[in-house]
Image (cartoon, rainbow, N blue to C red; front, top):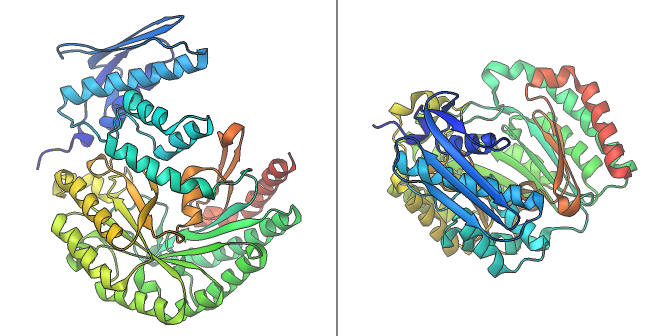
Length: 492
């Protein structure tokens, strides 16, 4: 198997005007993440800026021809620098793609994780849909297919946004434990077999953080719109401990929420007793994530559940609760092709999931497989077909895309998409991706984001420790810092 382009190790010497070297470096790294810088193949950037024009030229050593862009609009100084960066990025993409035979991306040079945020920002500035489409096509070379997708998602999301990001808010609770660690995972997820001894202290610390932060939010009269219990696999917490945890969530955050999601993830954890506890705690939404319905693939990627466990999890949730059920699948798992994806979808169809989230496999740096890519058979050429097939099934099930995000090293340079019928969209997923609402993170690795500034463009980010032991040991300091941040934020 040839080395995937994202793992090629090339070296580059950057020659660019002061302040733009990092733009060049990031553009190269988005195409060749293992690229080295300092010595090597020279890439030159020339910027000529006059009062009413910008001219950017990019040249790569050993490649015939240059790539030039000229803008003749009148820009404010900050807008001029932004447009210059955009043109440099486009030029770097053009010459690197040509030199290394990298096919053009349907996303053009729009490399951010949250592409819909750009659409919302332009809407907030009063731009028309036509102006936005032209901007995405001209400046970022985004394909018409992806522009249409961005509008479809962004237009659906607008009604979920509130006048102020300070209220209502969402609350995320992180449980960083899993039954086993999947081969594709790069999250802070700790297998119970090796880290189970940390659960008790972690659980005690989490309960303490919920009580302290929940009390303060009540005192500040901050309403909570959605709650998301994620991880890891939060349903590794079972029995009486799960009852205690959910009772605390209800006591401190349960007065006004519209949505309470538990990302059970691993189907084998959704026993009858666990599902009954979730139902008693008024959980409204559960995620059951088979990822694939091919047992041989599940075994290969380190999932500890069986296809039969998925069926049982659905049966338990339908019998003992009235949840909306989301189901995650992953495209491009090792050894899988389009027909495997179709098999998974046909197996899920009679289970009638309420939401479908389609992930395109991302080879992250922390994932085990990244070190053994020569043993993988990534379906790079079939990725677009896989996603089109999943989208077709979702449409036939009455679902429409309602949120999306992208990742580095993602299959066929695609995206992850959440599908849902009208009225069943996850509030938390929309707010988390679009960053239009402040989110308070509690637990292991949880991230708090305070949204501020004009149209919510200023974001202050604060992360809890990922390690359960570190989190438990430093919980009092974590709580004190978070209280200070909350008082400062909500008092302005």
